[in-house]
View 1 (cartoon, one colour):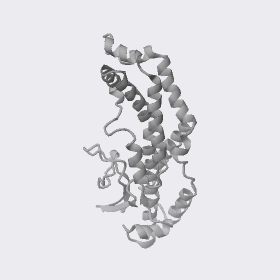
View 2 (cartoon, helix red, strand yellow; view 1 turned 90 degrees about the vertical axis):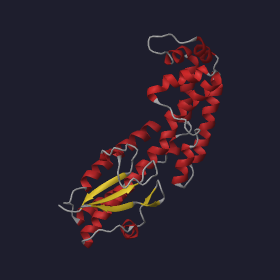
View 3 (cartoon, helix red, strand yellow; view 1 turned 135 degrees about the vertical axis):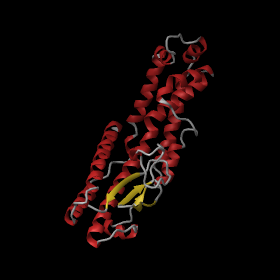
View 4 (cartoon, one colour; view 1 turned 180 degrees about the vertical axis):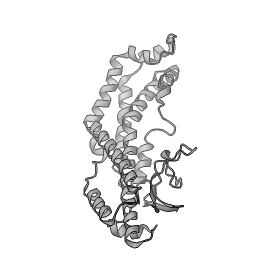
Length: 275
């Protein structure tokens, strides 16, 4: 179920990038904009991530951890440095692991995530889901073997905590980010389309979200800030954007803008105002 949900969001992201390129065209007519808006409004929203998590996904993650308990030699191999043997202390920690403790810790994280995922406030929901893991606990794919080895050096209890948190981080934490990013992208697309429609109908641009909200039937709100989607003019372009996952206004600059600062992640559409 979660796999299909992620595939659905991936396809929606691809469609949004296509919409972005279409909206950058200055050749769209009032009729085309209005028809396109009707088509977008007719689309059903993907089911919330929380509806896809229970109970099968939890069981799949626990099965993965149980597999680790049955295949401890594979866990040992995971920690093996290049062309060297696994040291005795690391090996001992792995074979002394209480895998029931690993699964209990994962279950505890999962329960907290579910409670946070039902929060109706999108900004608070994002913070609560990200705070399920202790601050600073992030699993680095490139250095995972090293992280496991270092935890094992500190004993089986710390290794158990790392394995549980790694399973949670890789399989659960990212779902809230994916969901909000998709919501924000679609809201930005609709807002940009209405901005183009407003320009064609009135012969001028507007950065008034309330004016655009009259066409959309509601003010377009950025789920990452719970404030109106940002609109600003930059030279001969109108930039419509969400502040993105870092929850910082980067001025409409996103990762695709080839900016030197890779931390800028605004979700944006740029509308050319002149042919």
